[in-house]
Length: 71
Image 1 (cartoon, rainbow, N blue to C red):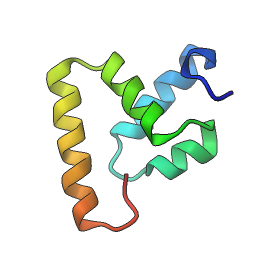
Image 2 (spheres, rainbow, N blue to C red):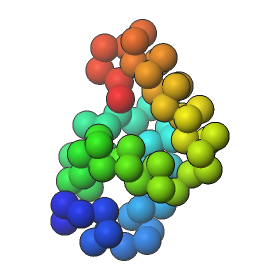
Image 3 (cartoon, rainbow, N blue to C red):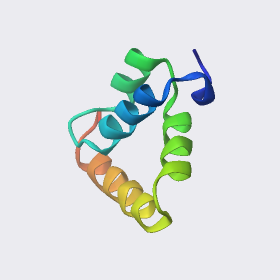
Image 4 (cartoon, rainbow, N blue to C red):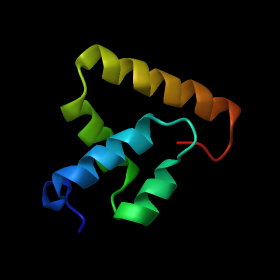
């Protein structure tokens, strides 16, 4: 399954929880669900409120600058 729309709702919920976690990388999500970081970002943008999405992206970018293998 490569398309987000092909995923069952419970998988989408799990992906969102994983993406919100500071301990799970995009690579981990891709390994488990077969979707790219770009698809995860799109899913998050479509699911979260705009302000929450912007806060999440900022946190991911800031943390990624400090940790080499992060999102």
